[in-house]
Image: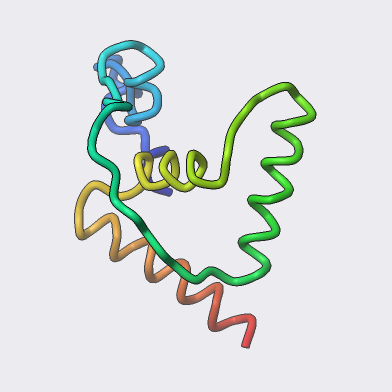
Amino acid sequence: MPGSRRTGAAAGEGPATRLEAVAAGTERVDHRAERRMLSVRVSSELHGRYERILRELDMEGVDSSMTEIVSALLYAGPQTSDDARQILRQYRRARDASL
């Protein structure tokens, strides 16, 4: 899964994921950066999953939004076309299995 691959951390070379790097303070996210509109269609199952997660976060006192969750997923997502290809294969297998 992208963003969770253990490359350098196993060898003690620092954070293995971009999210770990942000948490460690070694990588920053510029919240003032220019924003782009992203209009996508997702299955109701996926939308429902993230609506549920947002409700759970709210009950835990964590303020978030669908926009922030999607941004975080994109941030932690694939960094190379090889990574994206692997994720697409996994997604398409799961999607096609449900047909």
